Length: 121
Image (cartoon, rainbow, N blue to C red; front, side):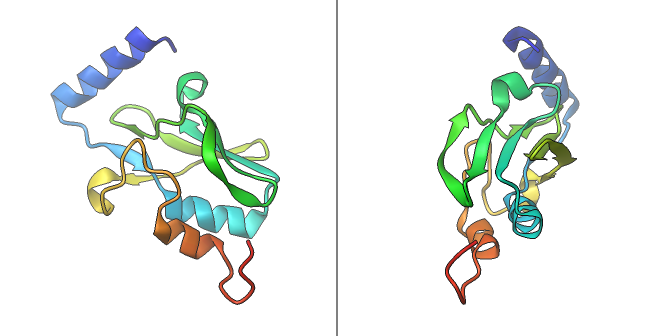
């Protein structure tokens, strides 16, 4: 989807008062820990080309996103891709402690991801 179309969809959602969905980093951490993918990416459904990027690779959280992750929307669904399997992965922005489009590996998600006893994923 091109940028003007995405912006128009955001405007329609905002004018209707649609709530903001943000990427659920805690759910992502649980899925990554459980499934142990070689690569995990995050993005917005219908707009991965402009919003997606790697968040986990080679057994560790990516230090910064590859690509351009923008993980909040009132019209598109935040998703996670685990080695090719795409799963809805979101929570309402109002139900988080300040997560937004630019949140990247918050402390709560890292605490879930890491096994404190071994200090490894």
